[in-house]
Image 1 (cartoon, helix red, strand yellow):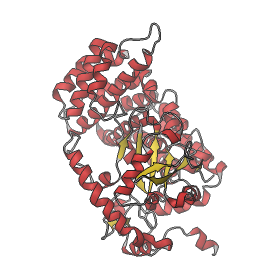
Image 2 (tube, helix red, strand yellow):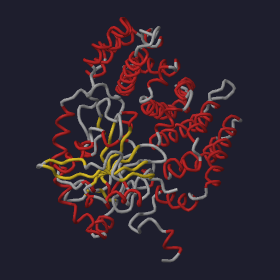
Image 3 (tube, one colour):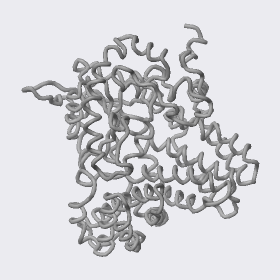
Image 4 (cartoon, helix red, strand yellow):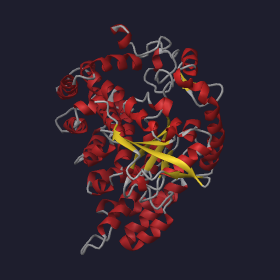
Length: 515
């Protein structure tokens, strides 16, 4: 293979979309740790300095394009290898832009948006690090307070506010940090109070859910046998009793209204009502984190053959849309996704059987999975009242409290996930499971697509577990960096599937990073 062939990673069927072009160029320098660190730290500081100095917006955007607009989206793991503290770099830059001396104009709002998008993408890959970062919730609250509401800058601020809200969803799994952040809690109360438009209702829904989670955690953790422990909600949440009562009466979502009612009870009666709240909490399980939807955002679809996130015939003006126009579905199973007919043909015939060998399995999976989840979610009081086909196929699932306690081999959900995959007609090797203990969640993702995610682990690490147990192995990837890949082998015992005895810490376990 020639050097030119080695560098070519995008098949000819893709009409060189910006994503593919960026991926090629970044891959060419991704192994240079010093260069990546210089680009991120130097590019970010230069962009902030230009924005603070009032430079033209084009100069600010140009300085931030590579460091904030490309690297976190295209090669987040290489970025985290080179700059382990990248989340801290981004938060410091955002904080600098909230200082009173900075004039908030369109360029500054654009840069804040870039910073927030980069922070979100890094947080999706490595949420534990973002959640441990001191002061991040307070900084985000300061950023929100800085965003203008009118003029050209105000129009751009709407996107920044939405992304900031999504970062808060990642932080929701760190209730102890949020409970200690009056600014962060005040922002949640502000979001909860505004329910006039559908967008505001969406913001309020999540804000109330996070507030309830934080409040219950605070009372349970504080009251665990400690003398003098607080018996009331954090003061910011406790003083917002009128807000919670208003949400309970006015919010159109039954779940949000129920959460508002429970928060109002806790604000009035404190720890004495925790038992009733837990018994009546409007979410499944013993009390899982309610803000799980954010983890669907890194799974918006990639071509199963080449990894392109959109169709090859997409016009240039859709370059910013992760799914627009939508990828083509396989005509047989309606699950596999491709950017073009050429990629569908290539995927059908790849070594090892390709999609031809698995198409019927995926069709069976779709027949079982979609009706179940669509019916369940259509009957629930969620926003929109329905569910997309993709969300039905690859749901983000809540795990009961304690589901990640003890050695990994003792986690109780392994067997259930394996049974669900096989009963739906698939092989265990067809899926990977991505787990986030912080949010008590798992996501099932098709292996042929996952390998093309920018955050995917190294191919060798992903394939290694399949060498055991004849390939009947559930592969679990921890949502962290460096990533951990564990394989759990299964066997049939008395007609039921059983986790093999060697799986106390995973039949196979290792670092999934390619560094």
